Length: 319
Image (cartoon, rainbow, N blue to C red):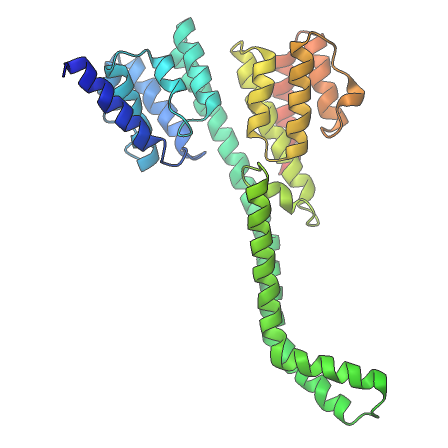
């Protein structure tokens, strides 16, 4: 067996192992970007620098190891990044490939790190915003489990001394069931809701499931604004580095949690690819203001600046 074929086998095995690992989190991606940029800026050979990269997490270490194996097998960096599977986000791999082709890898990595940090802040802010209603619901549920038997017991004592009419007998029967089986009933409801949530997430492509919480009072707008801020931030980055607009719109669609937003982004991508003007009436789910900003930026050849303003607007409105 030749040295090159041995390297190829090693690369294939490493790729198979790495693709089984989870994708990098929003917090890990900017750290990996910064390490890659530091390696390139220092003039250290990329394989040598990447051997020590990603030590902050197992996922990043695996991604770096896969890139090293690919480079040592004779592949170009952009080709290796495209083969990383689910470990590295497609937007990351595509933009780094563009940076390599244009000789602006350091600049692209710096911008990627900045954008990934913003997206992580959006995600963290959303989690914090959801923490309050989650705590309130947990407290109410706990109180209901603790208080229901005692409340039902008091009601039973009162109803037992009341006149035995048909209506009163039914109420007494319900109170007795609540006294003896109320806790089990509430726990059963909670488990059923959890199982239903899990099954629905299996059938749909939501990345986080946050869009399912949009019905909660005060939470819906925050979730949608966060989604729009994230989409505008990523689309602005892709447009800035000359990714073809149809491809950029499809990349953004693949990152959307809200399936209806995904539908509109894919529709806009198809219309752009076909060379037809964006039809305002065909955009069914994206907010009219967001769609208007996209259309205006495209018509005025200032899409990059418009998307930057849109991202800032929705980020401020979300939090």
